[in-house]
Image 1 (tube, rainbow, N blue to C red):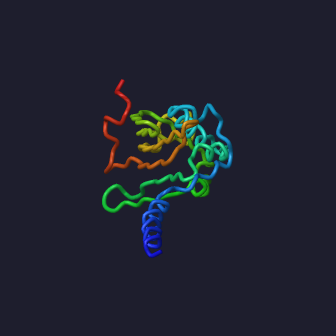
Image 2 (cartoon, rainbow, N blue to C red):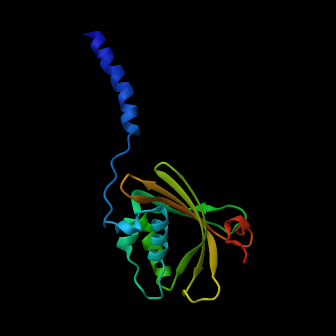
Image 3 (cartoon, one colour):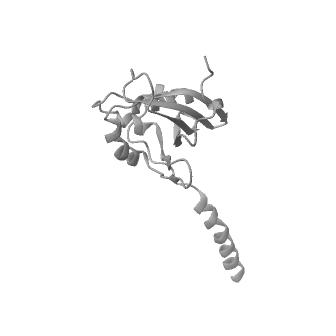
Length: 183
């Protein structure tokens, strides 16, 4: 009898930590993604830029935005003046919408100007250099930076797992290797 109690105790001691490391199944996205938006890494990144961009007063399609993200996804801007301490603010897609929507509604167009892409199995990483304009026709961007976008393919579609970005500033300019070739 004591042996069976000991065996049970050892089995539980091993099983509990393993079970604790097993992630819960993700919840379904609130809106089904358009298959074309999530078919390839290129398509999901293009959809991301499209959905946050628009003229002043034009509502964004937040259902489409949410459908691009894995249920555990985070968006993480780096803040700070460039020198000294920096901050990192992890946001859920809904928290991002709440914080960014008033700014985006003033007119915001972000476009990818250069890309570095790597893939291994079910994961991909896109280092996407962007510029931002208030109107698509503005001759010069008001901001530039780099989005580090992590993607996951679950066997059926691509998901954005995280977007981690930093804007360019005078102390931290974008290196030439992350910009389009000079023309």
